[in-house]
Image (cartoon, rainbow, N blue to C red; front, top):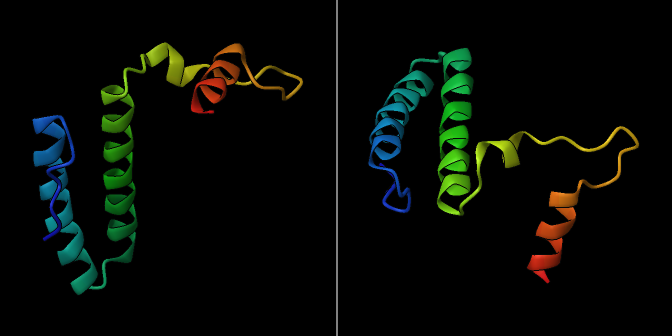
Length: 83
């Protein structure tokens, strides 16, 4: 089983471990739809943990691009920090 120690939240880590075990069983038994859903759940939990550990707030994650497709103020600030 992979090591999920990089996940900062203990509840997410426990959930990931259980989901991974179930994903493995789903793949072994040819339950492809269940496997896709579990794999997506694992990715989602890892991303949520990353964003929360990085200090993002829910409002930051939910903000959408403006109607003309340009970057939002927060996106511009985030990209400026990356340089």
